[in-house]
Image (tube, rainbow, N blue to C red; front, side, top):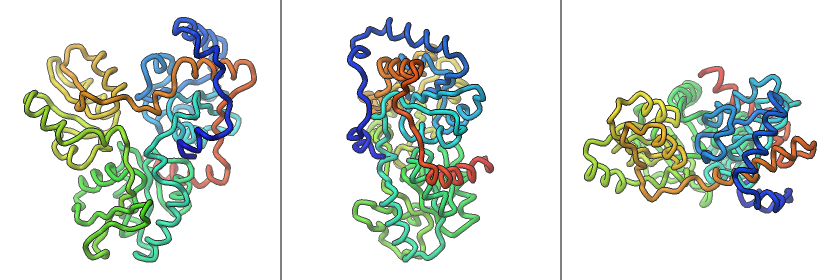
Length: 368
């Protein structure tokens, strides 16, 4: 389901009364329901959520980590995922059938995940098979829809995270000669480059033009990158890096590998969200950092480390818009609907999709 399909879907609309409540009343209602429902309710919160929401999270983390934690909650009957649509899908795939997963606002999608649809991927796979025969293993970033995970699982591939992408790409190359990496070209390019694969052996598949972008002999292609990206991380630029180097020469730059190859190459460190958090946690007092990742998280890190000089790599950066869809009114509405026995915004992955998607996830989980 794309963002536009989600917006157009026939779903319940939040009652106006929740939008008229102040933060104090909304906070009180959330706390009341959490206390009443106890361990039958579980709230995972992604690192990119706003402070007003993540304060209520029973666990904080990245998408896959939160889905796994949700699946380990034996007493949890209702899981209200404070994140985006593909994250809730993954939680639904990994949790028991009797556990229900909800998303407070169905408009909380992910533009990058929506850059690869199942139909587009099938068309691409057919053409790539014609060009390269059966020499490709598909890999997908966990930041993808359940349908894409299912496609990858059905075709012998696996999911990857920004933390284990190197390990999974090594695994894929032990299976076949080439990989197709969906949907984020930057994570794929940065990881493959770190493993010693030259940029000139990487091609890009354009799903809109339905063509492979590569100027040399196709037999030299090792990595096929899907032309997708994170709209947040692509906004960190080489100019941002040059600005930091000129105005804060002592400052270290740390970025997420969803940033472009050029930005990662010019930075001091690059790694997953947890990598960034841990690097700052372990840094000495007085150290200086420019961080290239989502603004809600950067602001939280700044608040947690007043003894360090920390700024965003891009000073004009905005928080992830779709993550920001989850707010106090929608969270309160979701929780009260569950408590009243009339839950809204259930996330339920069709079984045929879930089975193949789980294959892709399990191929990764048993190796990491």
